[in-house]
Length: 145
Image (tube, rainbow, N blue to C red; front, side, top):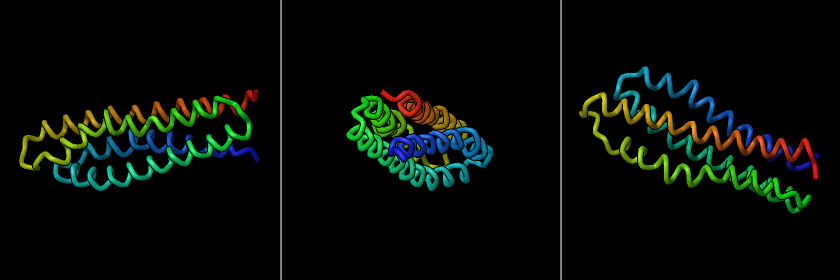
C-alpha cells in the first residue's frame, strides 16, 4: 500500500479533530459558567495543541517519504500545508491564548466570553488547513502523475 494513503488518513484525522472542536467542544464550552469554561479550555487547549501538532508532523513526514518515492510535488505541497498549522497556531492563535491564560477570573464575563468566542472562530483556520491538505493528498492519490 502506498504511504500517501497514510498521509491522507492522518491529515483527514487532523481535519476531523478540528471540525469536532468547532462543532462540538467549543459550543459546549461556551455553555459553561465562566470559571468552568476557562478551566476546561486550559486543560483541553494544552492537550489539543499537542495532539494536533503531532498529527501535523506525522502527516507531513509521511508525505515527504511518499514524495521521495514518487517524485510527485503534490506530496510536498500537502505536507507543507498541514505543517502551516504550526505558524498559524503561533502567530494567529497564540495571542488569544496568552490573553485567555492571563485574564483573572474576577474580570467581567463579557471579556472572557468574547475572547473565547474569538478563539473558537480562529480555530476554524486549523480546519481549513486540514481540509486543504487532505484535498491535496486526495488529488495526488486519485490522479497519479
